[in-house]
Amino acid sequence: MAKALGMIETRGLIGSIVAADAMLKSADVRLVKQEKVDAALVTVLVEGDVSAVQAAVDMGKEEAARVGELVSAHVIPHPDEEVGNSLLKDENKELQSKETPKDNKTTKKSSAAKTKSSIQYKAKADSAAVEEDQKVE
Image (cartoon, rainbow, N blue to C red; front, top):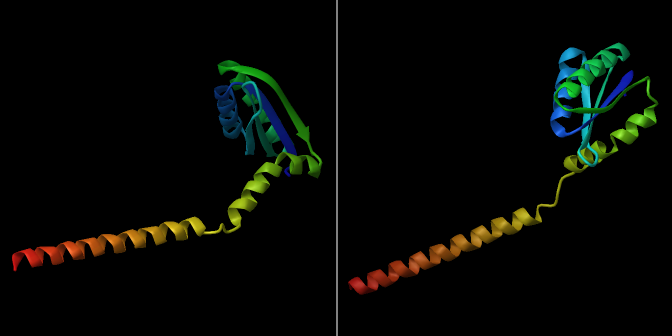
């Protein structure tokens, strides 16, 4: 985790998007997460150097209050490692599931079905051609 963690919570998605945009444009911070909590509450988390995160959160607070409803904002300088691990545990699980290869049973079934249907189509076309040849004679 970086040297500081900044959080802004808004009521409504638009305020959180505007706040995140303002934070990323105003200082050298990285967007960690935007999480929809409950009852239209959305939390935006950024990380970076303490002074950059503080400046970003200040700007994000202003912009969020301008376009929507700012619920809360806070900066944690030098958060403990476990704070970052608990906040990012959902993303870590998603990354691990994306990295592990999935079983291709459905792909194999669908390609087998396509092959079977193309063989059946070809057989029908061949039998129709034979019938046409027989009618001509």
